[in-house]
Image (tube, rainbow, N blue to C red):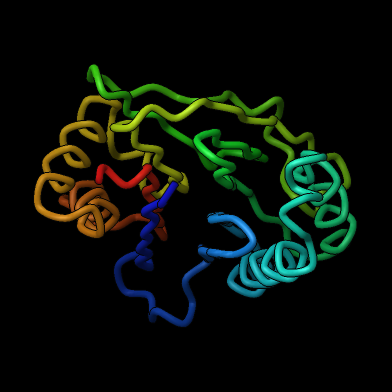
Length: 210
């Protein structure tokens, strides 16, 4: 089953793109996966380091291993240790196996579900605010059986904080009518209508409608 996945990120107003504290990556093999991080301190390096680690781990993991085990908890522990003593970052990540979304949330980045019948809700509440690199990161595991028209949104706090659920829902669904790749920038545009007070990232995922 084909999966559509697109992302966008913007730094806060007045900050060069190279100093964006957010980072995301989209991996398409062995499964479609998206990883979103928001760092603190020397944060652009922390976020990029974590997305790079997950790219490596996904590349080294076979489809059979992903089907047999849910690797996110183990990867969270490894990333938490890798950053220990340095900058910290949040994590929200999803991969799609068949029609099932499996993922994890650490810290205050969020995964939202926009179901076919309308509305927008959090897919999971984080167990704590502890971030990767704290030595206390607690993964909140996410599982959701995707319906054909479900949309998943992975957002850092810079993107979701200025928007309530209704505005996220409205921006995403309107943009999806044009082309699904327009969803992430539309959310960032809506969040930044009154200025970007923080770096912001959005990734959108759905099963291809045709």
